[in-house]
Image 1: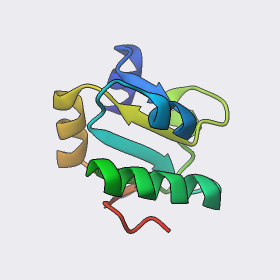
Image 2: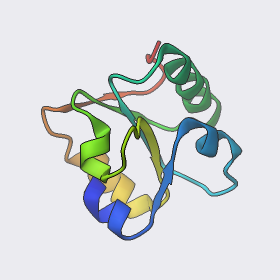
Image 3: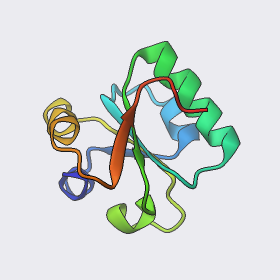
Length: 99
């Protein structure tokens, strides 16, 4: 589903872009190897906007086809819901537990 969201252009890349974006996003996907600073920022953002965070155990950059991509937000509600409903073993869901 992540690949479909990227191809459809329904993705915001990066923690800075997520914080500054005026677009509504429904789920945040974060790489497990993201920096501690990025994890804290995403945790605060998740708590503030009540948005679920999907943490990837594998490198997120390979799934989205963008080098050094650690955080993305999905702006399509139906795609986000489908992603949450069909999580595989390589992903786990956190709401505000990301520290």
